[in-house]
Length: 111
Image (cartoon, rainbow, N blue to C red):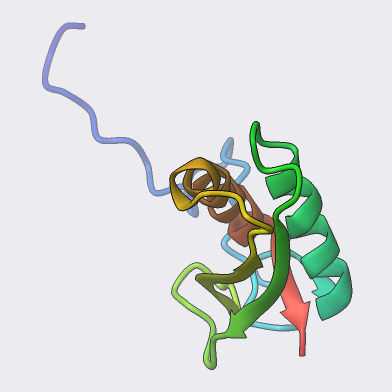
């Protein structure tokens, strides 16, 4: 590329950007984050962790509420309360990390 390096436009000022910067009716959650009943969230988290090798018997039995939501808009913490059913911590640790990394970006809890 010739000339000085160009700085990317602010996504909110770039007419081609897909980032809207807008929030839904609840200003604490970005558009696209789905709000689930707590039982539904626990079931989805359990299915996610059980899909990880060696974690077939692990259950997520609770999540911890954040009030107010974090900077990303998630209203539950990175702490999951698990019932490991004799699964060793080093085994479920990878599943735990997978679940947290993906689920907190997608779901909030209807407390």
